[in-house]
Image (cartoon, rainbow, N blue to C red; front, side, top):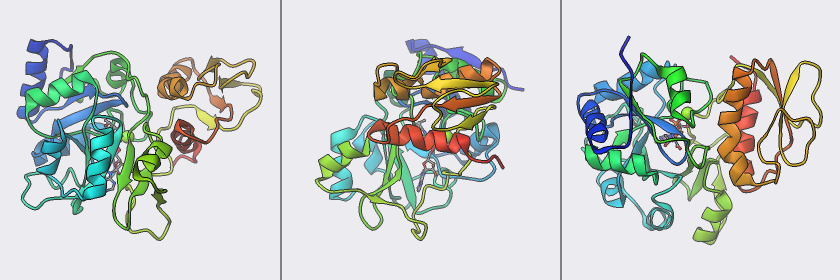
Length: 315
Ligand code: TXA
Ligand code: MG
């Protein structure tokens, strides 16, 4: 068991967090999307510890968080379209999967041996300050045990990872509350994972529709297992009422909800509440969580993706 410290966003604590990373340790930190479980992306040992701490069954590729486009370009090749998206949406909830530069120093475990790397410049002040203090790329998946709900507060992180990581940098709840949108570029700009940046916004920047991944596509996001983001409770989708023994996670004007993602149909609010409310309903002892229908546009697409995974049969 490791002693897990809670650090805050003060200069001495940020310095300590960066030192832990330099020594191969694990520091969970907030981003605008969810809390990430960070390690030095150039150290195999440090990155391996991420998989161990999460209990990940396989070495899925991780997102490397970088301070800015300049640092990103040291690790990957950008074409014009990738540059345009980076310029428009970084810092922000967008991950770009790009061809990895040879001899870039990135740990092959971070990219799971692929010849591509997922890169993201987070906008959250704590993430930015940590990146600046550390001075290199930080590999970070969501800071939860494998298969569980992504954490949007430091308390969520501690509930899953106390004793397994050196520290969590606490800077309050994550404003977006959904993981980043992931775009790949093989065969044209492709949506690999719906997320905190609505695909419509990306499409209007590109001036054309994104490709979707199909079953025959060689490019996928390998972390996209069917059962993922699962609370302890079972999940039933498209509920209009709650059945005996269920708790209702509502949306809009639905009546009798135990918690409501957004009574006013505000998708930003619903996204920000999603994981926290699933955590809360678990903590309240829900056996089954019935969830209202959520519109499948904008951020709703990512919300529904996470809910379908939460409802998928568990392996
Ligand atoms: O918002 C987020 O993206 C958060 C914060 C911490 O940045 N991170 C996150 O990481 O959600 P994670 O590991 O839970 O999800 C990363 C996803 C996985 O589905 C993985 O398969 C995909 O990104 N991915 C990463 N690198 C890839 C690559 N080279 N090719 C294809 N997919 C990749
Ligand atoms: Mg995750």
